[in-house]
Image (cartoon, rainbow over all chains, first blue to last red; front, side, top):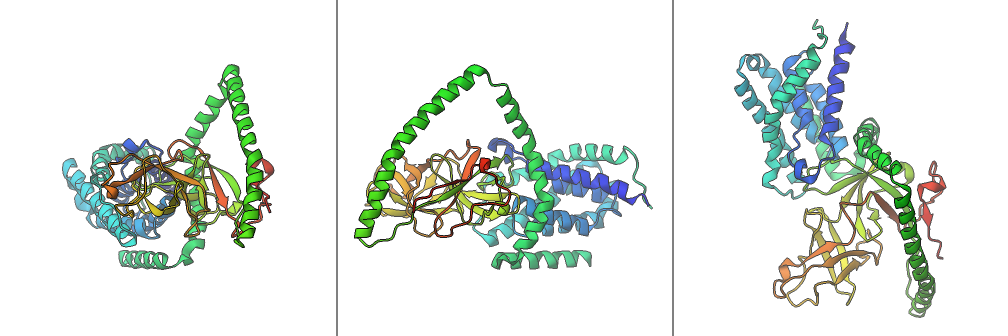
Length: 162
Length: 281
């Protein structure tokens, strides 16, 4: 019924996350830039699991692939897997204290980053620098921020769940 | 079940795109959805540029104008000789019954300030794509030397792999003695590696490396890099500094070499977009 309204909000935040993902930062800070799209997807899948499913994650993963010029299906695969995990555990995760939630986010980001590295390595010889893992840590640290902001966006006017 | 489908489809897509360019139309179509994001992200720096331009004073403009006039004069004088030398070169080549490729067309493009990849992969995005006839594996230069090559052309933008990308290698030639080698990217914007030189190779610090034209992607004779200082026996660690200002330039030029002449009477590229043409036949 009110479907399109809440969905517009979700898509808006995801587009914003995509902007952040390719934001032009100086090389010094760019290594810290976490995967905003995945963080946003995780939040929405935990908050409104009946709205954001594996399929949406996959679609936005595909769009991220096109945006960042990766092989087709790379982000799509990673996002779909992570969101599946979130969806199957979302009831338990909501009960957990914040620290443990952050730990779970950490593992999600790590899983996605590992998959991306694995696929990149098949494609060509990727260099594994220590800075490669920084976005995972920074992403975990950013989780409270993402959580607060997106919660504010979600509750600004409640999305009806039918 | 949904996860299973998603995983299978992703892996199928990965495999198909890894081996063939069959999915390029799909990517082009999807990029129409996504490219606005790139332009959106570019907007702040673009407006900042415009604002700083409009606030530049009369004095600086006059100074710039004077400086540009001087360089223009110098360039013109150099070109005077160039025409004569080119004719002479053609005549000499004719004596040797040797063919010579001449005439390259360039298209001026502007960098979009976005970071689409992690910083240790050097790929940048420019604002012209297949709608202007850009295609993959074209050389990209700036006023000082080779910048890279077109890695992927989308309708409204194209991705350019810089020569310093760790997955990029460019066939070069030492300008002083014609020694051929390959310069491999190091991942840092100010360094190329020359790993394939023997211990006794005649390379000196300060040597200019130019494109050799082998491999077909890069036209011959553009400056690429200058060899850094090194201690003579350590030939494995010879590095070079790219001539092009890889991290400072906003304007890049995409080159069409003669091999594939592209009609540059573009659909919506009027003359002020900077389409130039060297008509040396």
